[in-house]
Image (cartoon, rainbow, N blue to C red):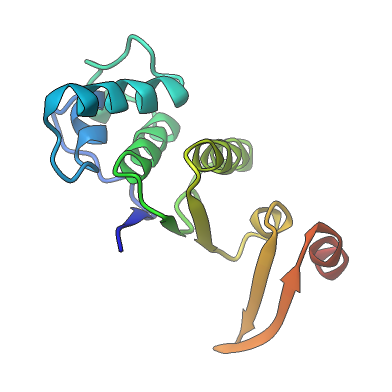
Length: 150
């Protein structure tokens, strides 16, 4: 199965455009339907009209938006996110987590976060708490998650 990845580094190649970066997530980026998919993903991330922007010149939070596009454009069933926004300011981190959840929901893609950030856990529907390499508990639903972390 195809899994989209979001890592701590947004992985930016010098001189490449926004649309080039997003297209890297496609299995075979050719043809009209692929072009439409790229535009649709770009638009859903708020990049309408910015397709030729050089990603390396964008601020880090926008580079992560491009990484979200690259992760979802291949239509995976799951995105594995390894604490991708940990180096950003809390406000930017929260905005990107919300954006990832919204775009993944729009494209019917599940998201698996590996994080130590409780605020990410509080936005989740299912949480596995691991301490010292062992599963401490499994939390299901907003109420149970909020009780544990609240």
